Length: 254
Image (cartoon, rainbow, N blue to C red; front, side):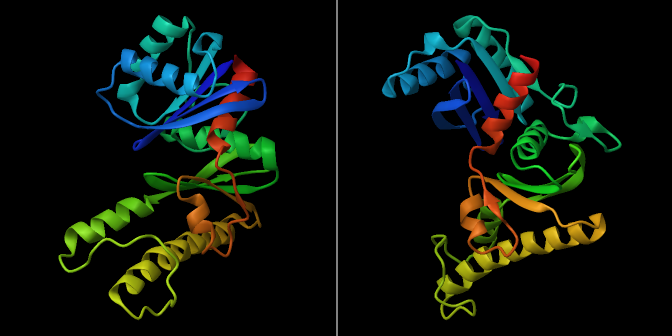
């Protein structure tokens, strides 16, 4: 079995694969002070709850944007799984050609998403990942990463608003009855949901204008399905895109 780990700034997602089949998937809070022993206890308990034995894991691949976690996860892999983990970065033979000035600046998550989107969907693509930050990345039909954009994630933007505006209270992210809000709650919901989706859509439009093509728009990340309801351009929501990218890269280099 392959253990695939996507470590972001807010969450760490772990998936266990048997061949191409995802057997189980779990989400943990990303904590830089967690030890390899704690990761082992959590993984073994989660797998046990699904009727799986962690001893069946014979390979591990990880994409991380939190460098301080990598050393801990290497110790975890070597101590408990007795495997040499693969860590994805710009030097990995992922099959994706990185066509920007400094490839080292491209985060592992963006490379992994690009690989998965290119293999699974083909053609020119924009991959939008709704995480702690929201990223938009352009992948050509020939499998080239040509750049993208990064802006604050929706949850960060929401928290910043509420922490800096004394008279605005947090509201659930539910579709408001009116775009022109009839109450403070509706105004906030309209601005957060319709406003954020509008920002993403406009970014996509400007990218398409500069690129001179009409790519497919693939979304992933924790809030992808939520934002897609309000977007005019998102075509596909793939919650497992990053895990699939990890599996595909391991298939190539493992």
